[in-house]
Image (tube, rainbow over all chains, first blue to last red; front, side, top):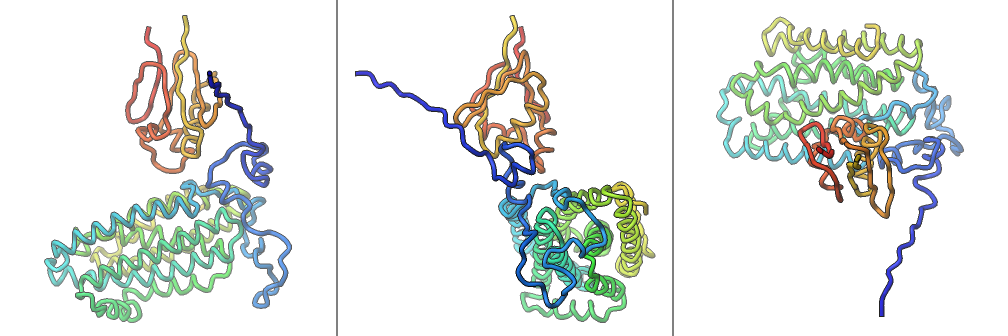
Length: 330
Length: 90
């Protein structure tokens, strides 16, 4: 007896979701990223108008002065949706844990001089409050923003800032023998030390910015590019003989700055290219916040690096150059 | 006599950016879809470029990752960090 094995070719009726196919113009398989992003946010049939802001609906195009015909145009070049984001961050977190183990096992921070440790206490640990403020800002951009393409990566970014604040907290806990006293002291420094007050004023001013894309530009080009850029890329000299362990412990931040920059640059570039009005608005915001961040950074770099503010000016100039390369008139 | 250089890849999410970049980078490529697999034939030579896959994938991509979705290939292989090329040297 012979057995004949037959195969039947079953063509699937659909290759993707209907709303994706309508957007792409044809029914073909697309990436999980696009399926998890395009047109996910609700646009119609909301039941109750928010009482706290009755001039707007929950998701409202009017919450920013910049206008986009399609808020799904500024896609994320990293193609992050929940799964890919978590996989990428889990890998980065593994490296963080390995670096912490390395530094703790060899007691690298304990072996650093008192001067190096004091510099960290004054210059690095208060950054956890700046990260917390950045977390607030990105959460705000997520909840007031429009379109999943932008708002989903915003909440990822908010979580990144929480994670980075934790990395700094863990660094403080290594320094104070897990008692938390260094973190209490860092909060006092953040609140009272004159070198931090311009930075604190800047981040607190961003908290009250109601235009979510304005806030996004302030955070991406002001806080991230200038302040975090200077502190994580240009401040090694400030930590003295603690610079090597700090470089290990803050490796996440330098990697993150590059990666986050790819996304925020793409978003700002796309939104600015939409119209001359957008370009003019964003250019103005970029100029204001890069200027303010540079001024605030100068106080920091003058005190921590003793360079008369040169590191902040370099970070500010780099941010302006980046803004110009995104098509902004700065 | 001309001969097809050919590569067969799985038909899944991981392979899709590779398939798309092969189609974009190799004019005249013949696409043969099978159950769970795609055979791509091209006259003389077929190339996978790292840069075009990365562009579609949105992250750095090591060319060796192609082996996770590679089923079969035909041709003499020439590979470096940037390109994976199959061709027939007569």
